[in-house]
Image (cartoon, rainbow, N blue to C red; front, top):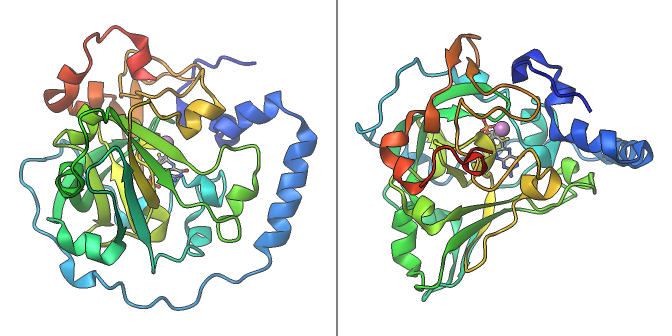
Length: 321
Ligand SMILES: Nc1nc2c(c(=O)[nH]1)N[C@H]1C(S)=C(S)[C@@H](COP(=O)(O)O)O[C@H]1N2
Ligand SMILES: [Mo]
């Protein structure tokens, strides 16, 4: 096992992926079989033809919330839309075209668990019932690349009002769709599908926590996690789960996708902090997508004013992985 002292972007992409770590420790045979199966199925269906107009198109652009300003230029829309992490469609950054296989209507989101009023929302009903706004946020992937994006969405807290969590709800568990016929990456059976993420109730209720339905003034493209994703801008990007089908209020802390797969590299908290290196690269700096500008990483990705109080000990490594 190599412990590289290089930034994430300076190591080959296949080395940076958790899959690289995992595959070094598991049999090569399993990977080959998965790749063959994936290849065969990948040849099967064509990418979906012309999409019907998004039924919520008229809600965009939503009014911009002036409380959130940036210290850097916005990332070019086409750059953000063509360099993605969406492991359901494969472990490479060029998944945008494969993600077009996802059918995003009809789509339902179950809100369940420890709530007084559990409810399954039709996505269009949900989006229309919520106060949409645009926010300019920094976004920092654990792999040390970053972007600055105008997301459209609604505060998680607005959804909470509709379902009324019980007092013993301590965490929120988010789950992505599961459909191996569409998401060919889900044929990689050594991953713990479906993708799951979690927040504490205090994190979920924080003003910054956004359920996102759009970007750059229009509905979310599939590769960004349509029709509904999470954005938690003070945490590494993998917390911002895409294409959500269930939101569950729980007493126990949910075990997340990456924590299950590579627990010594990816934890539950995952708050951005330049002082704590990833086991394989430094987190001191980040590279902006599109411009390759290298900037110093900001603690809590620059959102400490909103969230630092949630974490009692800023020297505790556990909060920063
Ligand atoms: N369901 C799901 N959500 C996911 C991921 C994923 O693979 N599957 N990747 C995460 C990671 S590692 C990052 S950096 C962001 C990338 O979001 P973007 O492609 O919209 O930039 O999505 C996060 N959410
Ligand atoms: Mo990421």
